[in-house]
Length: 84
Image (cartoon, rainbow, N blue to C red):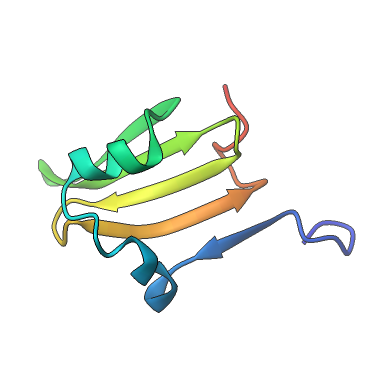
């Protein structure tokens, strides 16, 4: 919310069941397209997932590399969604 106006929203939890058919990062990329920026999320040298940013649609999608699923979708005015 900014000035009483919704400027973004997030999808998580059971709302992501729509993407349950995506079971690999390659399938994820085929469905969502090539992101404008990708950040690899690593902890102690282990790949946890990918943060994919799509600037034209102001979208951030998190791919969970451990559970092989979409873990979060942010749309709107979130940090990273608007380009460099």
